[in-house]
Length: 454
Ligand SMILES: *Cc1c(COP(=O)(O)O)cnc(C)c1O
Image (cartoon, rainbow, N blue to C red):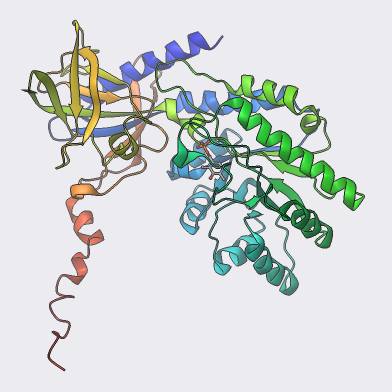
């Protein structure tokens, strides 16, 4: 079923690259852009909602809260909100983005392992759902709940400690993870049960155990254990105090082809088999998907400034490197990206596949977008596109070499056979780089008293 949809998405991407060159969004003077497929984002949002609607009991309240950190762009949050998706935020900045996008408190969830008293106070005043990370944070929330009433749904984040996936840095459910209350630690489960028994206002339970590299079965196991804990707490308290389970996000993304796998429908079905009680209607549901909603809808396109050869290996030197693909450049084994080649008119590049490196513009040898990848030989003036980069890539600029943040444009069919673009984020200017780099304080250090002079 998904095949046609995946092919259509690849077709839209090719059209968008050609149109971006034609319309001058991309060219010798603007050698780097990020492109977002608006129709694709809408499709994924609809697939997510349909997947869970198909497995929950009729009338079950379900909030899908997009993990803002995956693509922290206000127009994207607004688009998702229009598609029925809320926001999961984990900092004052992300909360500000969600509010700027018009997300109401009822569609917003605050998680973060390091919430300050001010952040907690603001969230409770706004009525935003909060998942408490640890006992010290619960003390702070106790204090706030004593001094004011709040409409915020409140819960505790637990770590079922079911184990790691293939990428250690992204595995949230290891024995020693920094997130949530480690359930299998001595006394922890009892502490959690007591915390709920003593606080009738704790009505949610939260776990986020998945991520790239974590097998679905392990994610399901983490959710099954979270569900079992909710059941135990309610049983021991003697009423349905926990009324909502937040199952987190973390569905992995296929970065090796255009195929969407796993799908939301597969995951929802797996959960309904592994944890049937979760969907029986006794619990409302919150999800927090990030990468899987946006990754396949973003493309970073960079002009080949120079095409050279070193030690017999062709190297295309482009404008996309560590500043837009930080994880790939620093951890290429864990985060390989597919590269598509386009000619100077933005048409798919043809010709025999040649093993080549695609390099970025930064001044260190490891700044490679792809090593030894096979595609038609890229020449000067061609374009290299890094695919599936809609989450955790070009929206996550890294300021190495003071390389400018690229402009980001959403695209959609214009209704007349062409492609229409909308600015999502302006490209950063040199003036902005100077301003953000202490430009207003140029003399700050030379006017401090020098040591020795008293
Ligand atoms: C990062 C994060 C998510 C989203 O994870 P993805 O892998 O992008 O789906 C959801 N919930 C929490 C608490 C997170 O930290």
